[in-house]
Amino acid sequence: MAKRFECLDSFSVLQEKRLIHIFEDLNTDLVLKVIREIQILSHQSNQPIHIFINWNGGDVYSSLAIYDYLRALENIVI
Image (cartoon, rainbow, N blue to C red):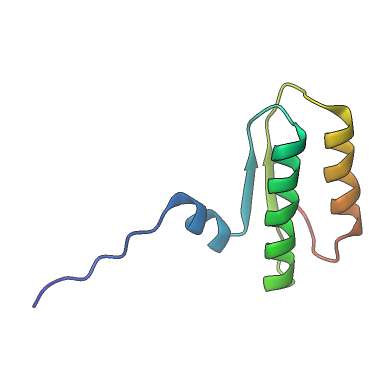
């Protein structure tokens, strides 16, 4: 009997665990990706979303866009 292995990419694993990592300087493109991912996770369930942030800086308006979007969520963000 052959064993069956599933191949999961890192994006799928992070999405399943409801984790978002931000390790780059913020810019408009990255903010759009992060907000899109937050939208997907918030529509999947009401469980908490975990966000890990480690950046040196970037665009202030991009940071505020993420902050404003997180404040509007019904989900708990950790």
